[in-house]
Image (cartoon, rainbow, N blue to C red; front, side):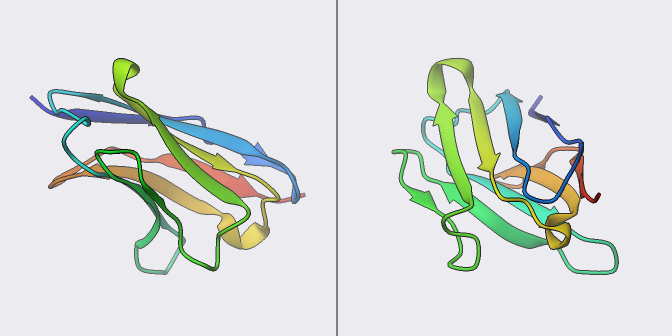
Length: 111
């Protein structure tokens, strides 16, 4: 049974930082790419980061310099480091691998 469990979401002030974690089980992240998506209220889910099986990272240009994706294969965990957070980064952040989704973790950026 595949499980993706996100954590690390919180309420944070603008300009703050968060690190999200996604712990996987039942699926081998050594051979599969892992994605982070987010969904803001009333908006479609969007890709915010991807890391390949070999560790190559992709972040959309709009988020480069603020978001960083990494993974620890030994811990079967993928991370999303988010810095200089803005109110528009608010949303539910999901981990995704192959056809599987986590339950999401809420990030709220507000003063």
